[in-house]
Length: 262
Image (cartoon, rainbow, N blue to C red; front, side, top):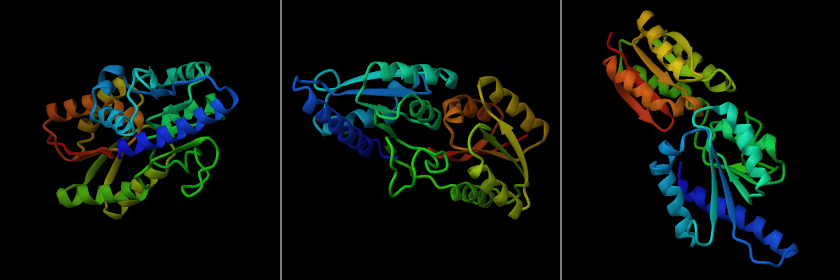
């Protein structure tokens, strides 16, 4: 995911909106971006992704606080707050909403059909109903995706290559997401004769419970599906993995794959 490209997409959409407004209201207007995230301000404000986003804007000549403003709204890991925060951004009449993560896009989509919505990365925007197609998204939502549901199966194959004796695999996932990626992961596990343990993650408590369940079932390794809720708790997931003497062979923006030593 390239946040500099996202910056270009956001500015293009924003300026188009502002220029249309200026055609009706000749008074000077500073473009305003609404930023809606499931994450927390502490985690995201200093992240490399946010830094790249700001850098992308600056390279296009836009500096926050000078010739562009950003309204940040963070759900602090509580996705149920997103609809309220999205509605607040709509009331502020922002020119565009940046929504990293599927839950944020869903909330923004419910809040407005007119304000442009840009996502920096959604697993399958077509399956989620955000866009009509990748070639012609239509509507008021656009963005970037570098993920294919087929990659879920490939990641299982890579984990098996790294751990030839792998026989029991756990998967951490958000059950509220479309099942496409999980279905591909199931198919890959069956083809490799792996016993799959599905563990649902909705909040921090579920992370603790999942690791206890993995230990009880003596899973050889675990893998995560790249959803916003799981991503938000990735630090705790890795902490528990380290505590449980897990060796993480695959750790990318698309998910985590770790060997468990029990």
